[in-house]
Length: 377
Image (cartoon, rainbow, N blue to C red; front, side, top):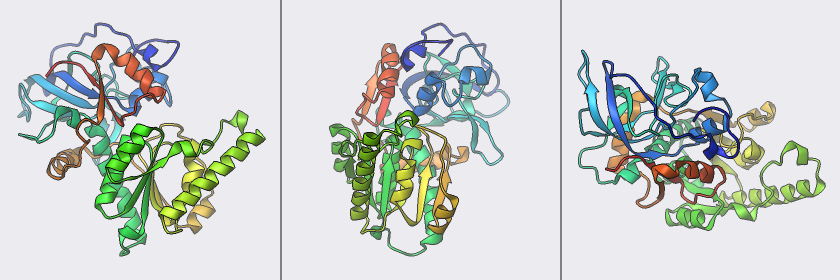
């Protein structure tokens, strides 16, 4: 992405030559094979919540911080490289780490000097490359969606752990976990299902409703509740709009009560944000947990601290995962088959990445796992 633009997110992308210097010690030259389109790329293109070019002090940024790459060359320097020529690896999106191994700045987003995967070749710190399992049972298309699963693994562990601090010994089968969002929420609900919870998730298309049902998640057809989202401020005084929202919210909460034996959801994965936040809190059970690791439609949230305290609600916020946990998550995915279902991705050729950006932003992609092809395998 570079410079000002007009139109949709795809208009912020410019095809150009991008030069970088020789490999420094510890760096690898890689050839991206298959990249995953993430919400952070949409945020970068719309320059919200931050303008990453200005934040990084750079005129142009090469996006793409999650995907499968082929290693072409490694400058090991004085250290022993853990990857070698020809290895297929996953890129870990860590630009700057805190002292515990969590990301402060994201690679190919707000971390200066980082080069993403929307390029025919790129160079990066070899320590960020995690090799695919030897003889993996899964396809590159399935592995390319790993970012949603790695994020979900970390967020779910924190949310479930918090819930258990208050509900120490009750059977999860008595409790509902609900999800707003996309691929990350889906992955978390699959973990919740494994843990024995009832699971339900909102979806807004026939394709997604069928996908959730196929994988044992109760689909909640978002189209049945057309006024559910908080309207823009300019429409909040509109009586008809207010009436429609009140009706949609009431019917949605009735459904949540039905699915949870009248108690509300024990855990709600809310990666949407502001437009649905008040509904999320209303749908939450006492001693419930609202957990988020994304902010697709709004970062600024408000709530009544007294009401949340009295209801003993716990709010969990996480970002990415811990770098040193990466091999553990990869191995869990391989061993347990907790990975994007075969054929569930939608892949765009490299020349059509601007179309992918626009289709993602306007909700025209039915899959939870949009990807883009860069180089042939």
